[in-house]
Image 1 (cartoon, helix red, strand yellow):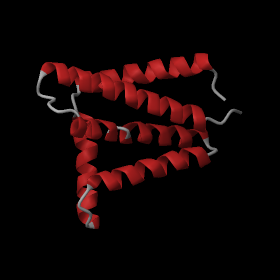
Image 2 (cartoon, rainbow, N blue to C red):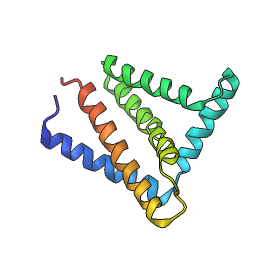
Image 3 (cartoon, rainbow, N blue to C red):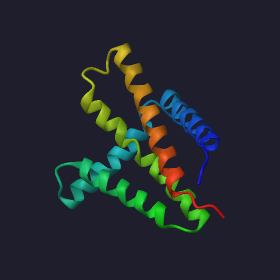
Length: 130
């Protein structure tokens, strides 16, 4: 079990990592992952890539709870961290206009915060001590 102090440190680390990713490589990971799932959903014959992306994310989250090997667990967390860019895609659908500076910064801060919270909670829940 992860204590509050460790959780706060982990959350801070994830916020910094997502900030660096979103600030310096604006939406690059979102485009790469979204394009991958767009191609996969087209190959499978589905109209919405959100379904493929969400099912894959949920599958890796469940897998992270089952793994006992630390390296495999950490690798799964990295994959989950990348798949959490689904939150960016949903925020683009919800926010009215991200071309204005105000909404762009609102989108960036909300996505960084939500992805960091989600990944820190997943890590805290799936962490196996010992």
